[in-house]
Image (cartoon, rainbow, N blue to C red; front, side):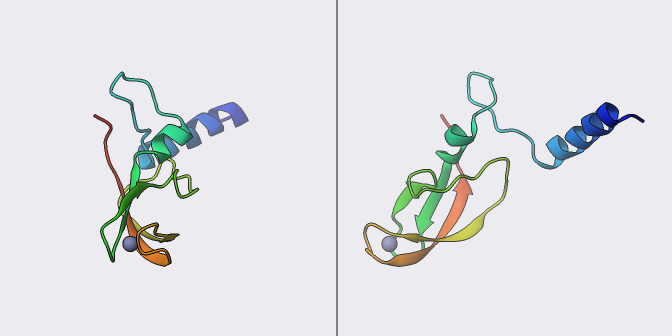
Length: 88
Ligand SMILES: [Zn+2]
């Protein structure tokens, strides 16, 4: 196996673990586009925003995760839950 084949194999494995998210029109989303579909919900007041709006980029990841962000409603740092929401 040469270096190029090795990279291809590595990429195949990687794309299986982190499948790209797609737009409804079929193309793969860019990093910024995808981050705009990661919704952060404040655990205290339920305020929702996207992770791009709070300055984060979440790309090629899945599942849910907690973050700390400055909630505009609570006006202090709060714990939030991050979840991917498919574009409609
Ligand atoms: Zn809040």
